[in-house]
Length: 152
Picture: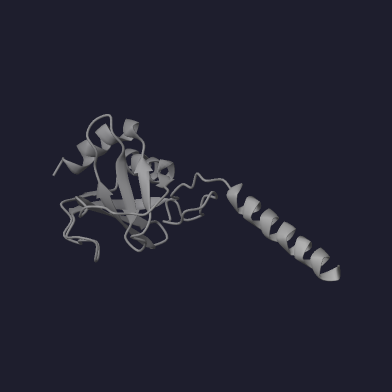
């Protein structure tokens, strides 16, 4: 009888743990420091955003064809990274089109791989250090993003 009670308690504990894991918020956003977290980091002030043609997943290409440091453009890229939502599932992506390199005011840096969608479609962002996770950029930002990457 005693074993039956312990077994029942163990089953209840395991079931509640599994249910609790399923109830977490499934919408994760990419903060501007590259972490997927619901809290905004303190180092979110951007100094420069540099864009290059991608050479694949190994690293970000440092041969930038354009660099931005004006306030309005930096504000756009901060909005872009903070509004990108994590896409669930297994990542199987073609080679990235562009690399995005962000330098923050405190001197820290983050590298991203970028796929730009067609007008009215989502674009995709992947942190260069985490090639197993992608983030969807809302379609309303894609046309502006295209202008920034095509102004080479």
